[in-house]
Structures are given as C-alpha cells and as structure tokens.
Image (cartoon, rainbow, N blue to C red; front, side, top):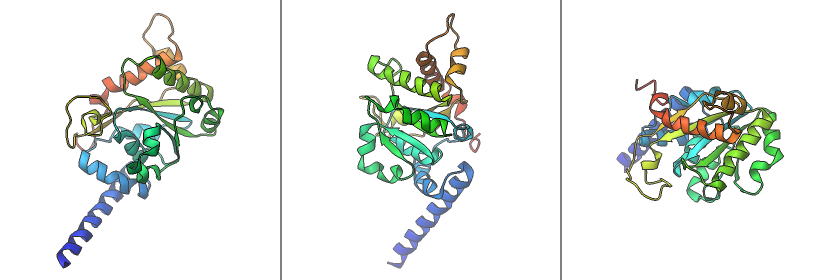
Length: 239
C-alpha cells in the first residue's frame, strides 16, 4: 500500500512539474497547463509555433482546421484563456471535453446566426479574441464555404487579424473526424501557425490577376498553413 501511495505521489509531482514547465514556457494559466501537460506528454506535441498565436495583438481570430476531436481540447489548453471558442454542437456537448471547456468561455455553433451576430464584432472591437473551428475539407461545399464568408465578414468589420492554425498528425489519431484512413494510437502532433493578417492584407497578397473575394483569400490562407506545416512547426526544443 505504501508503494502505491508513493507511486501516486511521484506521478502527481511529475505532472505538476511538467505543468509548471508548460506554464512558464507557453505563458499558460496553471489550470490550462495542468490539462495541457498530459496531451503534450502522450502526443509529444511540437508547440513552438504557438508563440505566433500568443503574440497576435487583439482583435484576433484564431481559425483552426478541425480535423479531429483533439483540436478543441488542445486549443482550449494553449490559446489565451480570454479567447471565446465557438464550438460545433458535438464538441459543445461532449462529456469528455468538460474539463477543457472549463478553461475558457465557449459557445455552441449555430449555423443560422452565430457568425452573423453583431455581438462577435463588438467583442473583437473591444480587443477580444475568438477561436473558430473549420471543417477539414480542402474543397468545401457551398454550405461549408459559408463559414469562410462569415468569418471574413466579421474579421473585416472588426478590423481583426486572423491567425490560421493547423495541427499536423491529428487526422491520424483515433480521434480523427475523417471517415477512413490509417489510425495510430498516439501519433506525434505538431502545431502550425502563420503570421496574423487582416482580410485586406490577405486579399492584397493573393497571387491572382484580379483581387479575390475576401472569403477566397481567407480560404487560400488556411490552405497555406497546411502546406507550410513542416517548416512552421519546428519545435525549438527539438531543433
């Protein structure tokens, strides 16, 4: 019995040390760090690029590719804790996500009015932060593309910068939202980000003859973070 108690104490002590390390290194709250540390350990997360997201001055929108059930938990743990997370209904109601949902304010996504709500624009104009989760589809249908148009409108109205985020490896996990493909028990994850840009800056940088629609420029930027993942996610600790 004494050995079991000693082992539990040792595990808790290591967990606390790891959490304190994550807190200091990434600027997390202790609550965030305590829930992030197990994810960091089991998935060996390369998180060096997340400093780009933390450095983005509000108003800012974190646009996250939603490839698995891991993204909401991971983003709740490592994005600034004053971020408002707009979750899909499954994530908003999943019992296992309860500990992570307690880390920051969340609201459930409603396709009819959430993304056109003036409250989100007001929140951003008040130096706020939003995290939105985009379905993993490199060729979205008309319904899915409405999300890009809505996000682009909100970002433009609030003059907010957008930080694209992609978690490489999550689609290979057992938490993947993909219908098929190889699965691994604990694949290594790496977080990719690109520099924050306004919608106007994305449109100006687009390599096209005519200026694209704001939603198309945002979509191209989101595709870019996927292509850039190997370069942008190198963890300084592992370099």
